[in-house]
Image 1 (cartoon, rainbow, N blue to C red):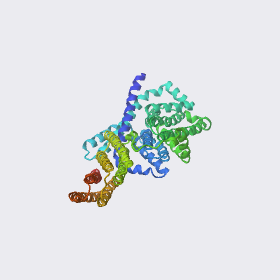
Image 2: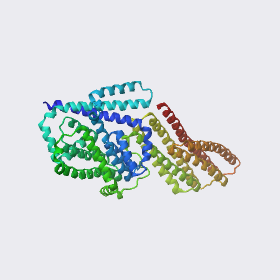
Image 3: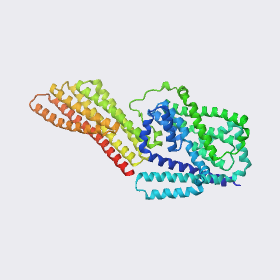
Length: 558
């Protein structure tokens, strides 16, 4: 027996298994993309909702590691607090058992034998992909093809290890792992840490079990070790993140270690005292699925009431109380870890753009106050915040480009394109705020004032301009065209006011009723306010267009 003849096809089968999982998961993510926003909102609900969400998302993306990375990203981006993340992490451990049941289905559903079903499934998926006329059907075809490739990988791994059923070396090795719980746990943790996928690690164990190589007690300890090994991905992901984000990865590790310690004690007692003979018997693929599921569900139920204690321990380990608040110019809702699940990354980008919008609104209010009060401190604040706005615009643009390079559906791609235009409009509004501050500085330098009638007229136009932008921002934040149409109406009024006030002021200048130097600044102010309203109109129009596209997309995919 040549071990090279076993290793090469086994590794190839493992590669197909992982690749099939990824294709299937990507198809499921894209198909569920429009529901991701609702899932994100569910995070604000109670702990049980968080557990359910963690299980659902992990079942979709086929990886508890990926879910935990996402959680770290959410915490780092301020989208989730530690209590919510703890619930999702618990749910992720339950959701990751789905892959094991898919693998073991070859035992409890004989018609799902990989040799029979895999080629048929791939063929159906390819036919559907070629003939699909809408996006939803193409996503379904990806799910089907991924499912088929996954089963081909299982078949290849099973065929590769089949000759090992007579190997005394492997039998002795697994028997040693069963008799030495610590060694079994470390083996499971090491293998999972290396391939960075507990689902794939469980799949490998099930493949070996199908050849009758794995005794019951060895499988139990290896499974518990796999739960610890899967934490390595999130721990690596948290490097360079905020203390809170690191705290989330520590919570994942603590949860799995505590669960492993508790159930190791129970398992050792059972296999050593209560039923010693059971541990030496071979375990089936289905039994591995049962053990994996029972272990994760039982751990969650047992530790759920003590989740706050786990959070506190993780906080102390990471000195969370020392966390400093982020500067305005630092990204709050964006994190590269979220790119693992593009649907969530898109929603986070919307939140960050809205945050930038409110910073711009703050600068607009400051600029107007600086103009009316000729306040030098406020002029400086406007200029400093303008630098922040420019930096945010560049950072958000870079992130949106990264999203475009991921697998996003047509609707999400349209949203990202729209956001790129929106932040450009916001940045231009910031420029006009800076111009208003420049007008204020000129008035202060020349020691001139607007007349009372001019100020009264400006206040009316300022009010409408602010209303136009505020409604545009709300339209973007809530994806509500009602606010967008309010912006449209306000913008029309601002245009009329600009034309009327400009004509009236020119008439005052012609009749020497106001200072020429202040008059020039007055006209500049009118121009900047009208331009701000124009950009607000662009933002509102993008919301209106996106709602129309989303409605059309929904009709096409049904």
